[in-house]
Picture 1 (cartoon, rainbow, N blue to C red):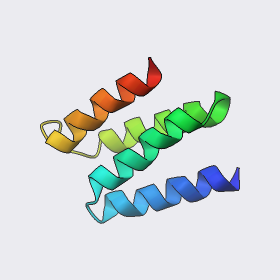
Picture 2: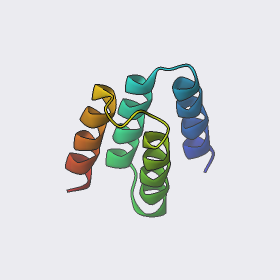
Picture 3: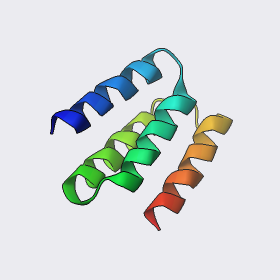
Amino acid sequence: DSQRDSLLSHVDIEVATGNYEAAFDRMIRAVKKFSGEDRDKAKAHLISLFNLVDPTDPRLIKARGELASALF
């Protein structure tokens, strides 16, 4: 899906430039909005981005909590 791929590219650029909070927020919104395979891919991509960030970073800790809320 071109919309999903465009979103992922945009998020990757945000992460590469250190704008983690914006990238995480955008991906969490996608997880909430998408369904099925698109949702699974968005979630997997977000988790892969989480692995690029220091586990003690408050932005990461916040985003992990928000992802958990979005999933349940």
